[in-house]
Length: 394
Image 1 (cartoon, rainbow, N blue to C red):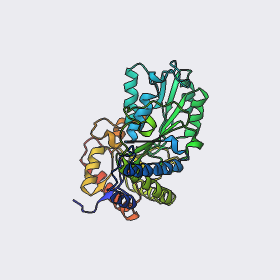
Image 2: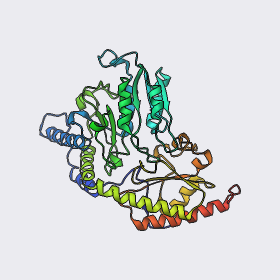
Image 3: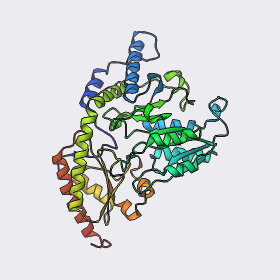
Image 4: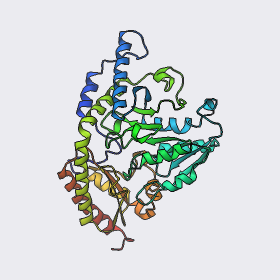
């Protein structure tokens, strides 16, 4: 096995930024419960509120609009499952007649599975189609919206194909019918500019470990004045919006990750766009019978999804791993499933091609030499797999 490890699965998770690792090590002795009134608790509370302001500033929000949560999945579950919470119906901004939601077909599994769950509880769930590039059908959304629609949820950038949606326009359409709008921005925040005021969204999800921060920490933006019903109850933390003693260390790490994103994001975006361009050309020039997925222009700078006809994605993945290259066949949260990517199928990719797809996601540590090495090895691997296949016709 090749001893040179090349990591190109940054959409699944990212390594800790060196500055984040340093601040985490320095903060190991911070143990006070932020709810305690003594000096130790007050110190933890002050650190949390400082990070809250940093996160808010980074996305154009106000500090009081940021809720710290355990993960992006928790934030998404909170919005989807509690937005139609019957206990909120007595509030002026809610209506018991609004018991429908709209989600796109290419959302993260934590959205789709939660939608499926509330559907079983009597909530009507409408699924919004996408085109071949993975962009949602805006006209279809207009047709779906009714006086009963409570929430529309469309991810800002897709985790598998990288397609970036026109969130501002989608939010305007939802609001025109009196519906709330949520966007899962886990893959977008820290990679491209995000401003909640310009987007005019009601809810937005952030995850720490996608931006070189620690796992186990995320944030949920809730627009001031929007009705909010907690998923986790039993404590006054986060102003009663998310019970449980705050993950102080995780929040500190998230704060430092946000700081580093402010400093490095713009330069990194240009670097990754260039590396992706080189990789895409290298794959196109050397490997026949392929198809790239996602929007060519409105796409995350480091995300490249490609389907290889006549080759199984799992086989490609294993051979790549043997060469010391870490990539993915799709969402890390769906790994282990034998089913082809729901995202690719939703965009109209044939089942055979969906089974033979790779997601290559680049990050801050990748180099041109690594890209060239991956193209070289991938070319040989596809040739080998196709050569062993009795069904592949050149």
